[in-house]
Image (cartoon, rainbow, N blue to C red; front, side, top):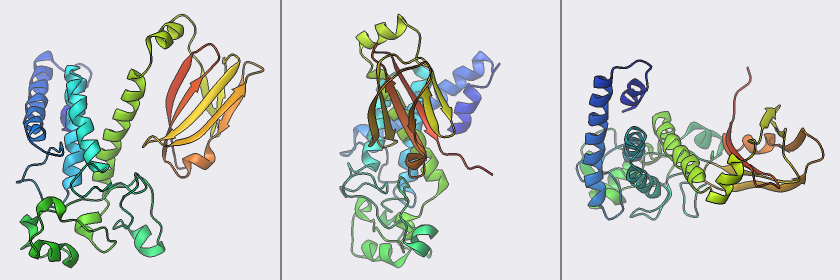
Length: 288
């Protein structure tokens, strides 16, 4: 699906090819939509798809719905994308958030070398989820999960939060990346559509706030009066909230180094006294 999205946005792509891609994406999204509409938990997985990597499948399904929205601008696709995110964050038959550190009942024992070796649980990573009993006869199924299969547990219930269950909790970049895209896109999109008409008018009638980032410190170059700065984690947790009185054209809002070390992606929201607002994203980068 990512290849379709990349090709669709490639400069100079012929209109006939774009139409073909649009049809392919929407056809696949419609097939997933039918599954969602018949699922009690709004998930895009049917009885034939339960197996290893169901959370990867769910994240990719959510990404597909987002691609369908980006191509068609039909906002109903975002509803179906959010259904997949809701499932992954706890609206499932286990009442369990598969993302470490997110929610009140969440994964605490990911199958990850950092957890296995040092007992450290990185926040914001996601494992494979419920396994499904179709794997019962395969040799590479861990014994913890296999016990649930032999006990007759339904597919959606075959999950164990254990650092020794690679089938349930193995962390893969292919799962984390698609989940990050799904959660990040919906977070940023929803923040944009929540702007009121009054705020839009104010923004259009005056210059946009200019926010600069220097040495992990945010500065505002043209804020006026009392200015509010908020930092959020990708899952919506408020990390920092402060009001600052501006005294000159360039003043410091916040040094975010302590927050970015624990949250690789941070969203910021700045609003000054005139009502002008600015949102953006901060990402952790490794310095060689």
